[in-house]
Image (cartoon, rainbow, N blue to C red; front, side, top):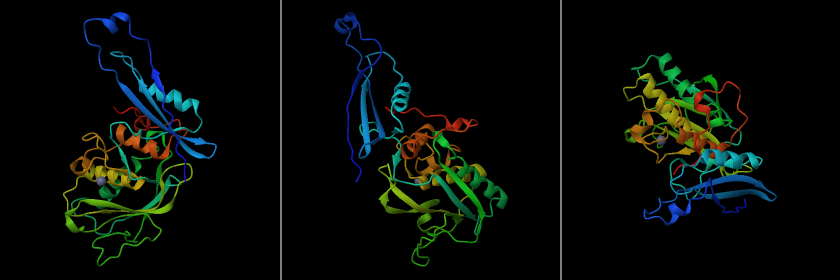
Length: 287
Ligand SMILES: [Zn+2]
């Protein structure tokens, strides 16, 4: 079992307040406190380092600079959600051991409202939106079309949900009127060096009973592939690709809250030189 150790540090940043501002007639502004947490490698396994930093009243601070300084000082430190922070992104406590994830597309049953190639391109673009997002090593590797059905399509009473070793995106009428869903299987062991269980397989099922445009389909697929990475629904709504309901049909690229969640799961890698804008680091403090 991983061992968790909490260290709390109190940092007073920038200049101290003057005696006048401390003892003057006006009440001092409420101090802002930022919480940070990092997964680090300890001598006996993974450890969690937590930092609570308080800002001088009424003065701006730079949480991103502070977090970057901590991360730079500790080899392999990975930002994770601080327990005391305002909840925003949420995690399903699962991730892939190897974050280069193969998948295939089964076009059978696609809606007539979209040209097959338009739907195909929108689905590819949704998956591609997560490539190296947030500076993580995450990448979905498309390996072409298939006739293999998804492992969790339709009514489970007539189509038993089975793990077949293939990650498939496909179309099927969904009981209950849902627009789409992601199913995944996870193992019982943790990915080494992380507190997350290992993802073994995912399938994404899309309902053909919806008047899609190419952008609506792309946004939905981006959202579902986010689930396939281990992201749960965000509380930062509207404003995140991982928002539930109608919020899942808005964003064509991961948003800062989504990227913060992805970083928590997969950490940062050395990015290639030609990273797109979406791969810039998000802010780590989320008060
Ligand atoms: Zn969802």
